Length: 129
Image (cartoon, rainbow, N blue to C red; front, side, top):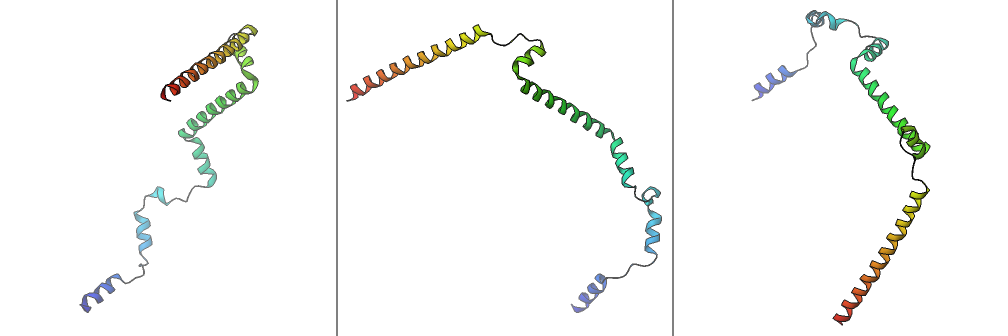
């Protein structure tokens, strides 16, 4: 068993690479991969010329325009944005009064419904007692 272990240790022992290894490997590499790496300026220029960069820039510009337009219409208020968009003016005084009257009618209806429900609850409680 020791003989096999010794052979295994010998086979796995670290050996220095021969001096001819580097020239042989370099000879097998294609010429394009042996050139010096591109400078940072050249890599940046290539990156800026790539088609996906142009599409990403256009998408960012569209998003920026939409965000600015949305914020602009939020800040200047609905009245001005309606006028700019060509829509009729906002609710007039008569529509505002109608809205307030509808609110009062709704509150009155809820109050009446609440009274009727309380009367029904009392009647049920009286029957149970």
